[in-house]
Image (cartoon, rainbow over all chains, first blue to last red; front, side, top):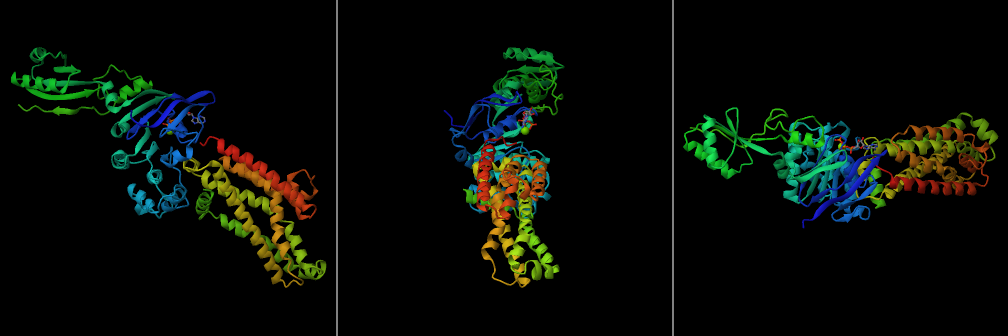
Length: 328
Length: 238
Ligand SMILES: Nc1ncnc2c1ncn2[C@@H]1O[C@H](COP(=O)(O)OP(=O)(O)OP(=O)(O)O)[C@@H](O)[C@H]1O
Ligand SMILES: [Mg+2]
């Protein structure tokens, strides 16, 4: 069995009678980048606060590194780096002094400060008062102090909040490197599916305090389902060729649309079609947009799940991999 | 652990101006008396307190000690708490491997160190005033050392209360208003019933059963401190 870095059982927190977090069961194995996804007010920050012992659950258990948070809080927290919501900082101190306040408690060598400042790209501004920093720089400083104690588990609440596109990319790459280079497990919350999809290996989706989906990203994508669209010169006769190969497409605006077809079948099909003198214009994969799936699951939009082909509806079409012009 | 916390807390006080408060309070008080005694030298030093000018100086200064101590506690604790409250650094600080009771203790120790430093400064600067004015008679070392600290001990319940308020609630308007109200009321301390803690520092200054009221001050402080610390250790951190 894989070792669980974070495990919660029936974690519940009520605010004035309403459950901000409702019987949440998190399970995060070692080495994962776990995307903790949910719309505003879903209970992500509340959950993270409970994981760090900042607030007490009304019921339920938190286990980190297999230890009970209530019993071993200090030993657990020594191995955890965190950033909760917007960054905290001491504005009248510079970045080095800010990190020094944590360093003295974490008991790590002074050289760690330079290292983490370098990691987040703040070396140049290290001696400036933090109150003069931009939001993005403060966010970086927050990540730097999360990394300071060389944690085994990193808990980041919306770490790319307030960063510009290049900053988002940088932090995303940084997070992606964590498990490979240092064996760090990461829990990163976000309300943007696209962001989580680009860095996480598994995902938990919460809505109104409840976990509504928890699995790996590939499984989430599988759940979203995909179709192969082949645009070619004579769709009607191509249908017959396809049927002879045991594929049963539907016809859609002069294109053949296949559901649940694997790579081998596509390869054989394309060869057969080329042999049959069809001009193939494009072969593309179209996915039911994950955003649509997300909205359907969280009930956050009236988006119709059946409009799977409508790739434009939720932004960029997700034609991946197979898009290829068949030259003939 | 508490040592590490204390060194962190002292580091966080850089550039906050807290130490200026510690310096200006007692030195200002002594300067006020320097003016008082300097301008009314004939009346005070040669006349009223001719027999013992040192006691005269100490008594005149001591009258202002209760109000000064209450103000200092309010201001210092508000400034200390503000360091964490300002950008809500509590969530970051308390997610570090620290015991909350020790965090609370460290903040208290910071304030206590500053109060003691202010008392020491008051002793030194008052002695300087007496020496500068060429007071006759032996320097009353013992009284100089204690005339700030004793009323401070009797005022400690205020610190116990404001410690909890400032560290627990983000809104500092309440503790600051209460602190200012308490310091103004402490002026009339000597005419209040003995059961009112606000009267204790003034009673210590007037020298009646000083030890009793210091003991009461420390005792009540201990109770308030433990209650405050227990709540701080359990409360949700926003
Ligand atoms: N201290 C509090 N007092 C009262 N209600 C609270 C408190 N903290 C959170 N809540 C409520 O709990 C719910 C979950 O809030 P939470 O901050 O965990 O959401 P979130 O998933 O982090 O959202 P976001 O994406 O906006 O950061 C919200 O409805 C919020 O109003
Ligand atoms: Mg949040």
